[in-house]
Amino acid sequence: MSNFVRNILILAAIALVVVVLNLQIAVLTIGLLLRIAFLIAIAVVAYFYWRDFARREIETWPQRAAWVLYGAVALLLVDVGWYSFGHPAGRDALVFVLVAVACVYAGVRTWREQKKLV
Image: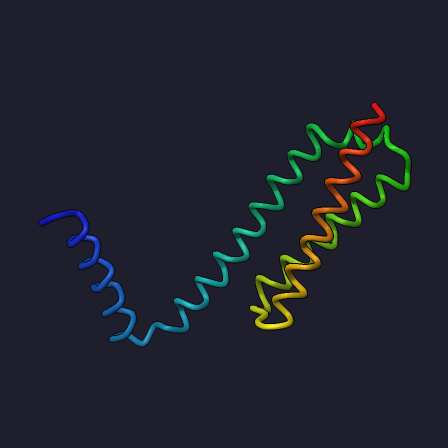
């Protein structure tokens, strides 16, 4: 038996157990907890990067540039959280993309401008 067929049979057995025992709510709960854990893991990695590398450099910037960068990052975090838990579609998804692009643009442009000055 190939690995592919064996893995498909394992997935089918798990799906059968979920359906027979009526565990759909448990699966949805586990999915929500995994989504939250993933967002927390991303936040922890970003915090460690900021603490170890970026904080000392950003402290040397003018106050306006630091506020722009931190504001862009904060708005991007709110935007990603809204997307993760709201599941927007249509115009709301377009707004998510536009806000994310604007935040990334503001952050990258501020970072590059400050790199030029150093």
